[in-house]
Length: 463
Image 1 (cartoon, rainbow, N blue to C red):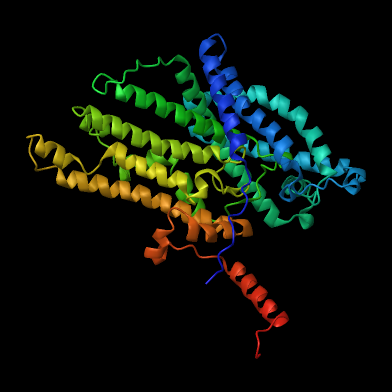
Image 2: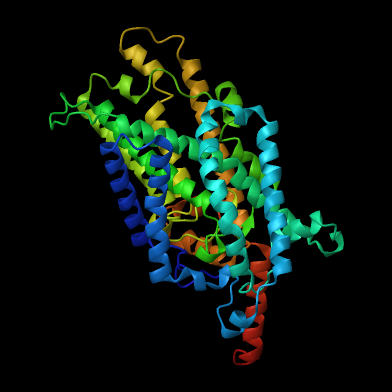
């Protein structure tokens, strides 16, 4: 048995800072609705900046994240006089440009990235790349002289390209490649979704409101509020994937190294879900919560509130990451917000919301009690229910593989052990042994070694 930590570890972010960023973000979206003359791409960039800039500034002033040990930066006088190596920076830039060239080649080779969905991403790159090419050499030179280990992944890629294979660390090279694979896959997709979402909300009319449940257009209000929650969620995600910056302590510490972690994560996104979902996990039908409850206005309101509440928790979970959201990577352990009560609040709330939205088991009862016959619906309802359970299982596997990856960090192990005893879902592992958190072997060995050392220094009476 592992000892339970005496307190929950400190989070990598501060909730108040993140919510100030969200407030600025929503304010900018409201202003963008009043200014339709602003081009769509410019509106998307303004919205992203309205969240990122206040969070960066407040973290710099309040949390001083640039001084966190995890940044790998040394701010002592010794580091200031340790001049950056121009040759080393040049090698890093070779590594950076090589990395970007490989990603660009992948985009050109796969027809998926020629789809209309990604056109906003290619358009914004024409703005971002020239600025990036100017800033990156300055940033690399400034950071290089302060890095405790300046030979990072970029240096190892550059060294490999220059033929210095004997100096290349394959482990660092692999982690560098995996980190950029994550960004290269998710950033175009999320930016394109965000671009579509924000420009849809800029032209969407706000439905009329009334306290009369029978007169209230519940579906219209639910959809609009749902879209706003998703807009905040995806906006935070885009900023997270874009700003993997060591100076902000939002860089990638480690990337998921196993296929068993990658496969259940990426199949939940396009283009993979478009191939797998409709064929094997199609749990939705025309009979969703809105149509099933059409004649029950009060129940419609209750379901709308429940679904929005669950999606609110899902969005809150994303907001809790601040600048650090990313699938398949470790960029700081989050222990506040909804993560103070559950290790996986986003997965839990999102999967529950799908049950309330789709009601896959309802068809036989709806048609039977409605006088349209009981037969022919049971097998369809059973199939849709099992398919939704299959989707839930995918997210359970994602949660477990994420725990395995993050458990390389002792902060996460302490957090997981704390949650095992004090979290909102602590009753689950007490009932189900297979759901219990298993600390990694290295943690157990260190605990045992520490215990043995304590007993050696302070033996109990009679020994």
